[in-house]
Image 1 (cartoon, rainbow, N blue to C red):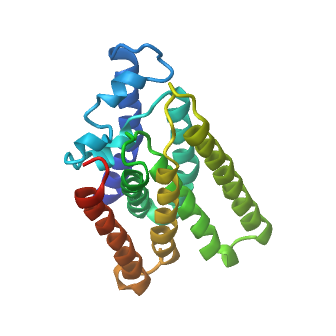
Image 2: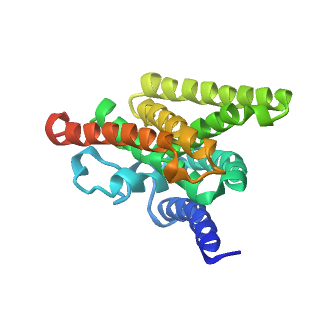
Length: 240
């Protein structure tokens, strides 16, 4: 194993450990009215994305380390392992990490536009990016798969997305007044980021990535959306 491969695998492990460590910190060492939901402590965390503290730019990424309860972190970690490890086995951790972080950033920026007054926690943007990337990986490499297996994988990922999005929309629009609404915008943006970046990254894993024009088209589109979101936050956001 080369030094670069070891470093990438170490960073991937740290991502999982970091999420668990942050969750345990707020669940165990911080006083909570309800250990399952962790409402108060995480909103005061320097890692949580908060509209009134958008100038602290790291929050657009660091919110992925904070989770709102046991079900939240267990579900996200489970999906990261189930989707991330198979992708890493084929495409290497660096490219999968690129897709994941693209979804995390897209999720917070989309939430800042469509839910401008809401705080944000959780790795759902990154998880949905893995879903989108996994979906595009199956589409791009379908000819190399056993047809029945390829169709099965597509149906499984579609079922997961539909089920989770239904739950997210329910929590967003029908959650009790004292509950914590889910930002469906972060889910959708993460999924689209995963599909766009993932299509490029996972379709040319056996080629030089920087020489593929699709990579630069996807990056240009992603950067354009990013710039729009940044300008929106600076000049147009209701949270200003």
